[in-house]
Length: 241
Image (cartoon, rainbow, N blue to C red):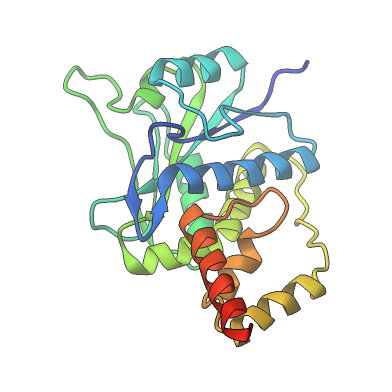
């Protein structure tokens, strides 16, 4: 098997939920974004690999070993921020320039997310602060923080626009390495969209854009939302019985 050019890292997972807020968990969003990007890279014939495809636990050592031993040139480590800020951030190693990190962050900002910053962080020992930079060897790793899960505006943007952000990152990455890019082909889903609209009219769901974006092949629906949908549907059926 040919070595991947890009390793996609779905941050956190399993027993490590990452940041939590707005009825969402970071691990779910990072997996959703990463699986979509994996699919798009394959469609674009871009050699790619991924650290996890399910809700599984990876220790920092396991995660960085997968990246380092993949032979990939680049790694995009997908994350969702927390802590009261707003907007997209990209973090690069102290040993690389900010060119790729800036391209990826600006691409997400061009899709409507606020641009927060591109930066690097040095640890007390003079090495990279983040283990994804420090322990992935020669792989050029960019940590992408798509928004703040505990910021109401960012949380809504992540629910509604995650796929646009994920696509923007892949497009910008292709531009960085001069790889041919073509836009994703959206499959027609008139029946599905009509069904979602019917659920809105029945007041069973209140966020149609979320369901249209996420209840798709390779999409992930947050468990709390699925549970609420089931409860609302059950109440609707009882009321009509």
